[in-house]
Length: 245
Image (cartoon, rainbow, N blue to C red; front, side, top):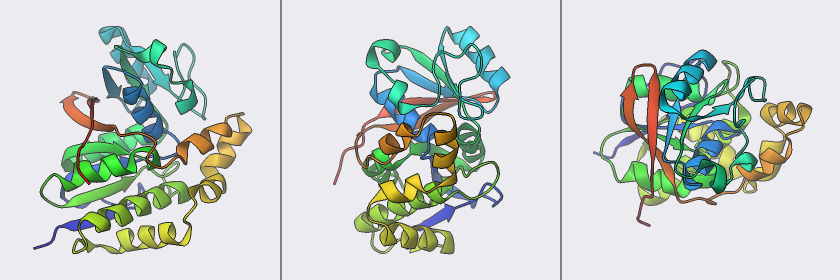
């Protein structure tokens, strides 16, 4: 029987059972995560809360990255901007990351699924190849924004659905996946749609509007951050480079 592909568009929705989950916070956490690992970070540790991130970073001798209100908390080495990622700074290092929406969505997905990857437009092809190579049903999880559905994440989920259907035309879509795919197909250029989102407006207010352009670069990276271990309240991700069509 063809596998089921579900899309959870809002943090308020319950996650369906699935073997594999792809988590999306396209503006900006999962985009930045991909850049960090592609830039040579040895591993990425995600936590839901700032205090947890500080503790993990002290224990691991790691860099601290993330945001609250779009900006890095006091004492953090990096924010949540893909434009801040420079290989000379992150290569060979462990990076501990916490964000308002994305890292919390990853923690939530890790409870529901056996395997978890972090997806965005910049690595949509790698994410789909990674998920397609594994058996079982797949759930796409939008981080959303402050507990509600987000236009930018729904669009990125649609890009994943459309690309997945290209590999597996018989995949069974739930209504969330169909809605996301319809949004994606109606807007072939991601930049105007992402720039019209509430997330983009919030970044503009803190002087980071240029991040949106980076988040819209489809298939810019070949890396997929894959969950390697659950360590208490932290999730440790490693870089993988899926092969295939």
